[in-house]
Image 1 (cartoon, helix red, strand yellow):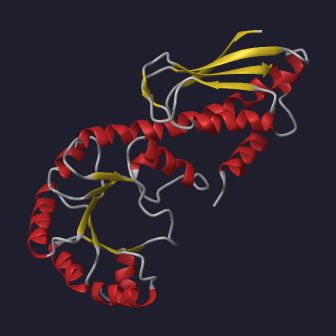
Image 2 (cartoon, rainbow, N blue to C red; image 1 turned 30 degrees about the vertical axis):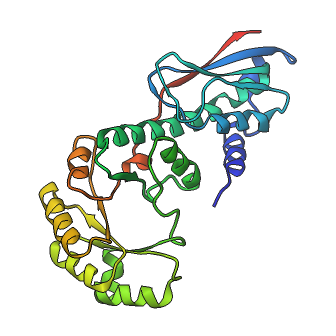
Image 3 (tube, helix red, strand yellow; image 1 turned 180 degrees about the vertical axis):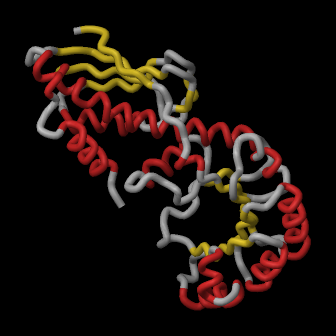
Length: 279
């Protein structure tokens, strides 16, 4: 898994290549500037420290002042940071710094919207593994900033038996039994089901968590009622095509978790600008 430092170095190397030709050919060496970083639309801030680290990686002499905190909901035109120091470094790092901040703030903003729609219904909004390659830790951090929870980080820290596992194993019962035998005892076992018959089989097999995949709201309500009556300790997760228009209704069915791939694979970047205001 890539560290934030590794991602920043790769991004800077990708963007700068052999050097910033435009900056080096237009800005006199030694020029000093102050630049502001401002949200051009309302959103939830995420990634300020990552943005600051981009600039510290480029030039440790830069002074970065953070005027907001990750998790803050800010209005349009809010200045969230200033960067002061060599103009070369400010300009060379502008695009990479903003890319991180815009993308992570977009995820946090979308997550907050889902969390707000659920309100006090009791369901937790969780992410998935549908993340940008290499960015998983940062994207899942942004989900947390937005008020969501993280599902498993990867294939190594949770058992989630999906449809293809069930086909390969032969049945839900066989898959769960083998997982109980071979997986670490500290891990809960989750099973994905698509209908009431599979739900009953997963309960009989002893699943700890059951993912109700692509069920209608009425089917979710039926599945929750059936499970609560017979197996009240089993956690229920709803997943599949849940958007901002449907999430409140899904939460109202009584599920414990709602997983949303869109949080990381479809979040729109927030419009954020950097402007040099003085020299």
